Image (cartoon, rainbow, N blue to C red; front, side, top):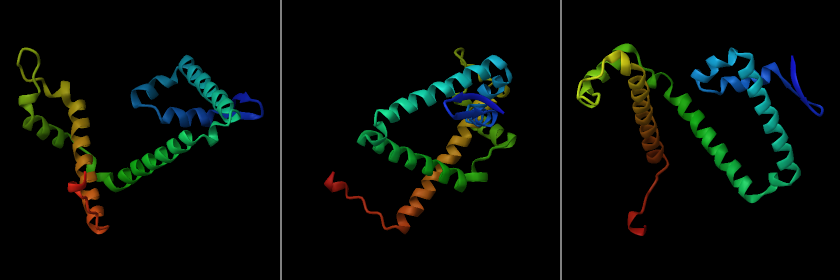
Length: 158
């Protein structure tokens, strides 16, 4: 279903849904509201208008833009590789989170020095634990790739 037109270009409900899927989960849950969806659609239209204007101004050939595109491509590819290689290795379950909580209780205190209840910090701990696991996976990948590619760093030349 077509939601907007910019000249002969169309923005469909599928385009809007794809954009919603890129948002954080807490924002996605608010996108059932018609006003929020309309605001997001207006944002998509605005971005397309500004993109057209930038392209007309020749910014698609600007060296700084081209470097930025190359950097963005590298970043997206690295992120995708990490997602593919880490998969199940960064998943956490309630037992992992509870063990992590027990191991870090001394750092989980309120302003009065009382240990925060597990349920209050569970989501934060899940994110922290997943980030730690992902960091370990990435470091292991970098180490293996560095070894296999014969990486040498010459500290004395810095």
